[in-house]
Length: 155
Image (cartoon, rainbow, N blue to C red; front, side, top):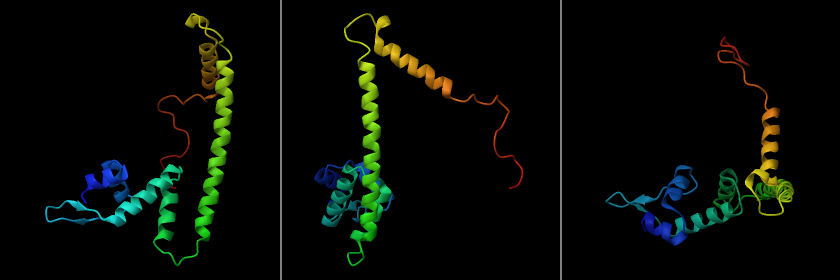
């Protein structure tokens, strides 16, 4: 099958397929006499595996490790367990961050109970105050021509 057919069969955009090829996640397909990429069922299965991992929010490096073990079925899967355990930790961390974000947004929402003029909107006022506090927390940038850090000499 050609790349468009692989795209349709897996619901994966053509550019994503090409990206996965460049990243080494998908094996290079053979070429037709007209120089078209020709994909097989193994590409469909591998792409489905990659997409499922990505739907679980796994990073490409995590997927790469999993594929390495999938390609070597006699290998010990201890590293696979480690990759998944680390990913679970990242997901738990993101959930905590998202809960904090939800709390912050609900606090903003509580500042405006009824429709009114935008100039009196508690949400807009709260966003403005938070933006001002963020700016105040940013350290000033050095003036043009002043460099902080490494010098231009040998290291």
